[in-house]
Amino acid sequence: MELEKVTKADRRRYDDACGAALGMEYVGERWALLLMRELLLGPRRFGELRAGLPGISANVLTQRLAGLEAAGIVHRHRLPPPANVQVYELTRWGYESEGVVLALAKWALRSPTHDPTLPFSAVSLMLSLKMLLVAERAGEWQARVAFRFGDDGYVATLADGALQVRRGQGVVDATLSGAPSAFLPVVYGGRPLATVAAIAVEGNRAIAERFTSLFRLPPKVE
Image (cartoon, rainbow, N blue to C red; front, side, top):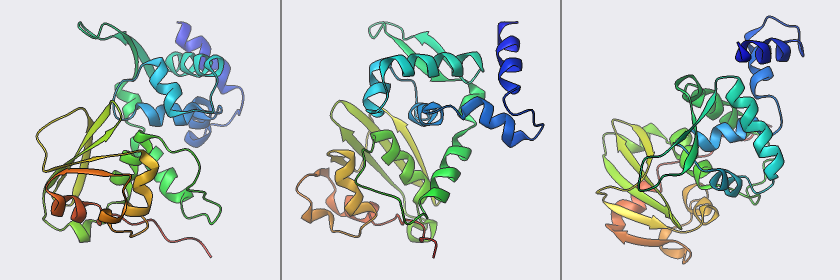
């Protein structure tokens, strides 16, 4: 099998039976894990992946997608009409990487060298909400809040102290629109939502304000 040839050749890089070593053989190439991050909330077109990772070249993106396909982590398919476009999507096994990606991100955020002024994709923001929700603040409160980033939309559903996020639209209590970076001082900096002109609010403002207060960055290491 072609997949067997690729994975066996790759495994020679570390010559180590540890699962962590094998995992690094699959996702250790530059940009590979971030590509998986961008696909965790659903399939994306090639151009959407480039937009979410502005530092990657088209050539490198093509190479990394091919490597992830060969490893059985990503697959290509065509959306049905009227979209009728080719997209990349994680396989069922690929989607299982969500816990790994979020745990790594949360661990790394404790570093004092983290720079929140660097580019930040819409998927990054939505995954950070799943990762950094403070369940005690949410309690038994339930809410559905939509986020719009240009043509890209997501719905965050809070219930039972957990947050689920999906791409798309739906019936919600409130809708927040703006650039992903505009949300950082509100969600993680404690700035009141009403003071940020770069975020537009539709629907129930009280729910939007409470929702954005439910998250907290992990403490920095000393």
